[in-house]
Image 1 (cartoon, rainbow, N blue to C red):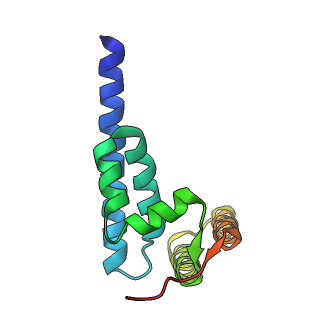
Image 2: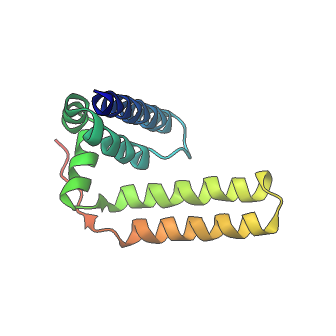
Length: 133
């Protein structure tokens, strides 16, 4: 009984994290500089481990489904998605390093993190853009 309650609470927490990630993705659609793809993929990860219903909803979603399905199938991202992602990383990390962090070691660490994330994104497979309509 205790194990079942533990599993239920874990699933609840993972679902909540999925919705939180999806909320960040929705904000990213509206506000430039806030990433969208990463939070959608993170939501997919959380939903795949917590709720078959929410996972299926995300996979079938008109906007978020293709991103999640392509990621899971190993198809990568379009060149445009990579460009937007790296641009968002450069802008947000630059603002953070330039204005929010004063300690040199943290600045260096953030720059190294931005380079590592950008390199990871750029090394992923590049999916050809699908024709519109």
